[in-house]
Amino acid sequence: MDTKQKALFEYVLWLGDSALILGQRLGEWCGHGPYLEEDIAITNISLDLIGQARAFLTYAGELEGQGKDEDKLAFFRGEREYRNSLLVEQPNGDFGQTIVRQYFYSLFAKFLFEKLSNSSDEMIAGIAAKSLKETNYHVRHSKEWLIRLGDGTDESHTRMQNAIQELWYLTGDLFENLPDDTLLFDQGIAFDLQLIKPEWEKQVRMDIMEATLNLPEGQFMLSGGRQGRHTEFLGHILAEMQTLPRSIPDGNW
Image 1 (cartoon, rainbow, N blue to C red):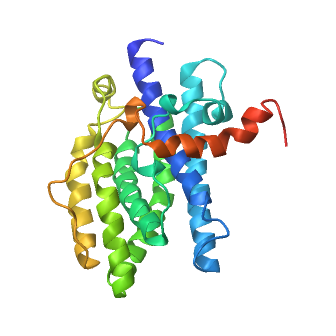
Image 2 (image 1 turned 30 degrees about the vertical axis):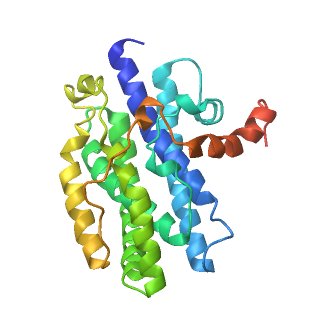
């Protein structure tokens, strides 16, 4: 692959890996939701994300040109080869922490897919446009819970505030550009992620205020997910996710 092709491959991997890992995380709630309807809602969001991951990883495999499909890319790469954002690999914690993580990511994905729907790359534009419809629902779902729990009982308020405190320093990683991204910016394939950061922060501050919660100020921001530098949690989730395909690599079921 030339430099531009490699940049595009890495960019699409980031999109697919982030959706895949968050979908896997939400799948852990299946059968453990606070009540039946919410259990189904979270599982459906998980399936939406897995669908997005499948589309992006299929395209990534085509770009790489080494005969790898979405399954090969999902189940036969190591931790350092994953490009997902750090936020999505964090453990579910309690229900409040899951909601805060989902709200931060879904709102980011909404602004991201709105931009990418106009990408000059037809595959990215098409997947983004389809994903945007699902993501709008994800934002609405997580925002409603954010406000309901933040402005709820003393216990739910405390848990939501604690979740924000634990996850906020990982949100900066969502907006990390890589040096080779400029090759994609110049051709209208991708765009500077810093362009959507002000919109995202403005909406977050409005919703957090409505939920009677507070954002940390002046906190250190961790980054590196797109460069394959992850927290200790990714290795554990990959081990669980990849055990069966790696044990029976040619299995069909």
